[in-house]
Image (tube, rainbow, N blue to C red; front, side, top):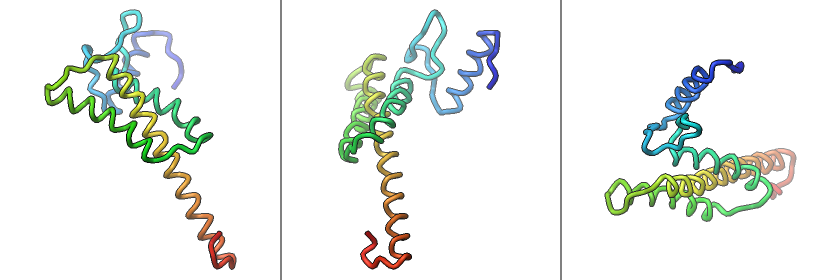
Amino acid sequence: MRMRKDPYALWLYLMKLGASAGCHQRPDRSFFFHGWQFPVCARCTGVLAGQLVGIPIAIKKNISTLTAVLCCETTMLDWSLQYSGVKKSTNKRRLVTGLLGGFGLAVIYVNIIRFVIKKIKRSENVRNGDKNGT
């Protein structure tokens, strides 16, 4: 994408991008910066930020899939409580639980890639004559 001089055109492009990613973009559930609505809601902002932070951390540290799932569950719990009407969520809580969920997703992505690489290496070792696959 080439940079546009018209900030409104850029904002419209980002809003279309956010909508195509599946975000509802409700203004009451979104953050604003200098009067411009974020292209994704507070929860999606958290998920995206959590993934951006989570991928390099998950690559450097071996984080368990259980920990990742628990992080994702916080997002689901907040959404469920809000949806059922038990507790009203706030944009701050949506952001925090989105960060946890995005981090958890990033860890799961990295763990899946590690698992696939390990399986490929094992199958290559078996093909090369190592009977144990190690």
